[in-house]
Image 1 (cartoon, rainbow, N blue to C red):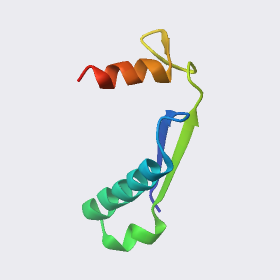
Image 2 (cartoon, one colour):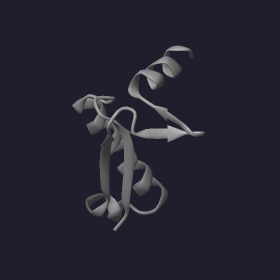
Image 3 (cartoon, rainbow, N blue to C red):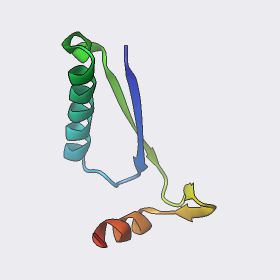
Length: 72
């Protein structure tokens, strides 16, 4: 039984985005392995409080991520 955990900031994704992400991750697992795993693939989205995530010694928040995405 595959178990995939995805961490995102609280309020980073809408409910619809979470549902799409879960479906796409499940599809990636079954496309790569076996369609038989579809019903037993677990995807858990954990939401992390803004500022409780760090990279390179720096705490990051949701606003930091929004700035990174906007700069594309």
